[in-house]
Length: 330
Image (tube, rainbow, N blue to C red; front, side, top):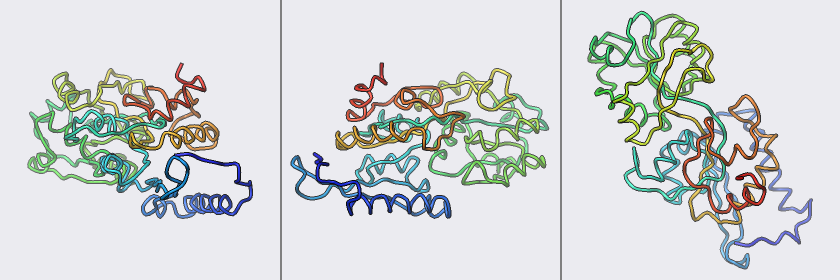
């Protein structure tokens, strides 16, 4: 793909329409965010062929987290159905590239960048249960009310986590309890359940949305045993410390698995020049865009492997070339 910007004027009709379209999308995010995040894809047709002639290249950005931010998003990009998506957490494209965990074969995914988003996959229990490990809880088989996330970004992880402990979600019901399924970790019913004491256990990620209230109301975050951690590592997860992290008040040594990162993911055959220029645009607008982080990350952080933004699968060659030219990878 080649580009020739010499004939494009600052106020050309095509650029005016492009700027209007993006402002409309920004306005929808401000006024009706659920509409934007549930129903919109952004598609731009770029010139195709080495000379810029021929059929246009359909460049499609997936926006809706309901169908393109988790496992399905990775599969859609790998299959050529979408060109660019934001996946959360980084472990999803990492597993996809390696063909482990929920992925039966290796997927040709590459990263343009990774946004920081510190998180962990955890199990929190009410102090009334009087237990200090999942093994102890499984031995007791208490009747509990359990809050579990049900969405494409975490379903697989919770399934693997419970499997590593030798149980599944149905065991909580067999013990006489009830499972409350929520789509988002921030569901207000979960926080209400934690505050009222009606919830006995939470299994999820999205720590920023409920971790603080869990700590305030005495819930204990369980450390995973070594055999469980080894099984989870075999699936493709990485162990991580929860204590002294982003959620204040968790000070006891606690080892769980990482669920951080928000990488921008494309197919490895994504046009190199386009990847290069997108990296350049991110560099230009870095301080203007929102992040799930306490401070604006540097460009070096956006293209490197960090605790809050894991990046252990390859950068796209076009993006990598830009970062190397600017010295961000040194």
